[in-house]
Structures are given as structure tokens and as C-alpha cells.
Amino acid sequence: MKALLEYPGSTKWVTNVAFLLIIFVCGNAVLFSLAAATPLIQADGWYFLEYFLPRYFDGSLDILDLFMKRNGVDHAQPLQKLVLLFHTRFFDMDFRIEGLIGVLIGILWCAIIARELYRQPVGSLGERAATALGALLVFALGLSLNSTNVFTWPLVTLGYIALLLGTAYFAFAMTSYSRPRPLLALASTAVLGICIDSQAIVTLLATLMALAPMRTGNRRAAWLQVAAALAGLLVARLCLWLIARHAGLEGGSGVDIRAFASAFAEPDAITGLLIPFSDSLIHVEHLARHFPETYPRLMIICAAIVALLHAWFWIRAYLAWRSDRYDRVIAMSVFLMLLAYGMTAAIIIGRVPMFDWNYLHQPRYVHSYQVSLVALAIMLQATIREPRPIRFPRLLELTASIIVCIGLLSVQFMVSRDSWILPHYLTPYWQNAALVMQRLANAPQADPGQCPDIMVVCEYAPDRRKQVMDMLVQRKLNVFSRDFQMRNRLYPELAAIPGFSGGDAAQAPDETILDAEHPAILSISHRDRCAIRGTPLDVSIEIQTAGLATNGIQLWAETIGGHRQLLDTIAPNPAASLRLDKQLPNRSHLTLVRNGDDSILAQADLDLADCTATAP
Image 1 (cartoon, rainbow, N blue to C red):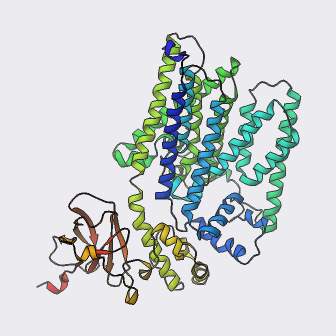
Image 2: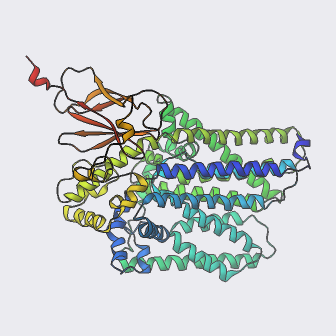
Image 3: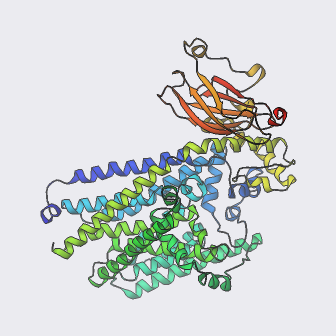
């Protein structure tokens, strides 16, 4: 083991292998974002469409509008609004672009952390391998697909902005800690506070606590630097307060101390406190999917393992400080761990009294929980490359650290494989939401009926809903833009769907389909002899493409008095036939469409007699 760690020969190949693996991890995150990020307007997007973008369109937008908030306790998100303006201007409000930008910012955040690892002297094979393993873990954990919601909801993906700015600020603080520049510290902290609002408070506290154990030659200058940073934060908070006051939003409900205290008196408080530990490693959705009977017990086991790793982390940080090995890398890991604690504490304080402890399972919060695993990865690589004599305790710690690293990478591989199942089900959901958007645009003041959960516009008053939908249609934004439809293959109405337009715009059949020796087959089988009105039927749909759909197919359904729905999108399949089990209303009409040119391959009908008419 000692010979391996101290091998002095050429070791650059280790860095090259790690670089290729990091490219794979980054590519996995980018491709998943492109496949799963919701391109349609959802949740907060409707609010900004209604109140923020009209000022951009009529030319009255000013810099203060970038700090617009829904209420006094909301975060100002100026950089997120700049991203919204960017993809609205150049991509007709395509939120998939927003998600992609968020992922690229996440990659840059991981790169800043990895750069700190490679600032260490690298000579032997052991040092280079430990650094490469640490960098790989930073990217794998920082861009983890553990919670798909981090990538399916683009506004959550933009949460990487705060992590990027906070980590860059800490890297700057470490550099200036030994060379104090108070004015620059004041200015940088003020900019940080204005850009990420109250998250800057957590970032600054984590920075000060992580830098405290570092040695400095001039304590007086260091305290001056701290005072300047605190002054910068106060300047930022004052500016944001004045902006909120100008908008009439300076008030906030604050924290209900009594409700917060009573939350800790509840029986599930201890289990609730374990949620951030367990979900940071494996989100409960994965455990519940694979172990529906035992997942609560497994969640506690996962939480116990992660909690033990946190305890080990702080022991290692303390030993590094006592032995004068508290360097930039250790400080970075401590900062990220404290940052994760601060963000998690903010979630607990703000959400648990309003809801309950189970609310901490919200998938979007995993984005904050996982930062602690990145901190653990940095500490693990520091432990592996620590120059100590190879004796039994050291060998045991070294072996355990390597096993933990392999375990973390294995978990990321498994949750990533699980998460890639999701995009297959998203396309039908998005298409149906797009059709509902057209229905709302056609009759915005009518009762919208049942809507997809991302369409909070359905809950608006009729006049308010009409104003928002008219803006989308007139400005040709989102699903009402032809460029958007071509990029995302989402269509708001039947006439916009290639292969389904009527009249003179009808698509001519492809000659290869007309002249095919064996045509495609679409058939419906069922066990029912008649249909009960309003009750869907269990059916089996058999599809035979006969080699006519090399790019895959889409299966669409129409019903009398209903709306056209995309039942399924099927990737190219070499199998001769495919069988799908679905529930369909009686008198449904199915259409099989080829991807690529949207030619109609086959059609079928489900038409059973009414059971009440056939009853004796």
C-alpha cells in the first residue's frame, strides 16, 4: 500500500481518466436536464409572467423590477429574472433553456471546488489518485440525479446560482484572509447580499466560521476584514429593505416562535430531523419505489450512516486544526458543510411550523441537503492523501475512506439509472398540459375544469386568466411559439400538430407507408362485452410497426366530448410487436404517428355497446 501511494512514476494518466469520468458525469446532468426540464410555464413562472414581463414588453422595466417579490418573506432573485428575460427574448420563454443554464452554472460551481483540490501539490500516484477521486466525487454528488425535481423544475435548478456565488465568495475570502483588503471585502459582500438576498447571511456566517481556525499573520487586519464584510452585508440588507419598502413589501410574517417550538414537541420530530441526512444520500422516493414495505426503516438506516459520517467529518476537521493542517481544502469542506446546515436550518424554520416534518421530504430541498455530501467528499480525499505513516490505524482509516467513496459513487449510479426512467412519462404530461393551455386561451373566462398541477393559472379569476393567456398568444410565447413547438415537439392545438391538421393543410401520406408490403398494425383488445358510461375500460394495445418507424412512434387518443391526449411516446424498438396496457374511455379513437415526419401509421377504435342498453 505504501509503495502504491508513494509511486513516483508518471501519473498523469490518473488525471486524464478522472477528467473523462467527470465529462461523463457532466454530460449525464446536461442530457437529463434537456430530457426532463419542464419547458412549459409552471408555479412561480405564472406570477412573473403576470407582473414582471409586462413591464419588459411595454418598456417600463427598470433595475428595481429585478428585485420584485411575491410577498415580504420571499427572496429577491435578480439573477434568476435576468435568466428569464434572456430566454424570453431569444427563445420565446422556453424554460428548458433556463434549466440548461442552471445545470451549466452547477458544473461551474463544481469546477471551482475541484480547482481548490488541484491547488494541492500533486506528486505521487497516491496523491494524484486521491485528488482525482475527490474531484470526481464533487461532480458526481454536486450534480446528482438523486432528486429529479432539481432538474425538472428549472427555477430549482437555478439554485446553483447561490451556491456558485457563495463558493466563489469563500474562495476569494480565503485568498484575501492573509492579504486583507477591507474595501474589496465590503464591496464583494454587498454584491453577494444583493444578488442572493438572505442566503448571503448564511454564506457569510459559514465563511467566518470556516476561516476562524486558519492561521493568519495579522489578527488585527483579519478582524478589520471581518468588520468590512459585516458592513457590506448591512449595506446589502439596507438596499433590499429600501427596494422592498418602495414596492410596499417590507413587511413579513416572521417566525412564529410558539409554532416552531411546538414542532419540536411532536412525536415525529426526531424522525423529521433525520430526513435531511437520509434524503441527501437516497431520496425517499427511490426507497419507497424499491422497498415499499420497509422504506421507513431503511430511511433511518441511511440517516444513521450519514450522521456517523458527519460526526467523523467534524472529528477530522478538529484534528486538522490541532495538528496545524487546517489548509484551504479543509476550510472549503467546512464551509460547504456549514452552508448545508444553514440552508437546511432555514428550511426547517420556515416550513416545518407551517406544514409538518414530512414536508422536509420535498424533492427540491435535496438540492440543499446534498451540499453536505460534497463537503464529505472533500474531507475524504484529504484523509486519503494525508501524509502519515502506514500503520494499522492509518491503514484501517484509509481503507474505510476508499470504501465510503466507492459506496457514494455506487449510490449515484443507482439513483441516476432510476431517474432516467422519468423522462419517458413526462412527454405525455407536457403535451396534455399544452392542449389545456390552448383550451384556456380559447375560452379563458370559462370554467377551466381539471388542469395539470403546474398550471396554477387555472386557479386565477376569469379576467385575470384572460389577461395572462392573451399575453402569451399575442406575444407568441412558450407553447404558442412555432420555434418552441419545433424544439420541444409540444403543440397547443390539433391544427398545430403535424399529421393532424385538417382541410387543405392535411399531410399527404408517405409513399413508403402506402407501398409497404406489410403495413403497421394498431389493435385494441379487451375482456368487456359492454361499457358502463363514464367508466374507463382496461385494454391491451398491440402495436406492430413493420419496420416503418425507425425514429420511434407516438400514440394519440381522442374521445367524443374530450380532448386529444398523447398516451405514450415509444422509442425505436427492434421488436416485431409491442403491447401496452392502458385504461381508455369507450368510443376512443387511437392514432399511431411516426416520429420524424409525423406520418400516420395506423388507427384503431374502441367502440363497445352501452351496458344499460344491452341489459335484459
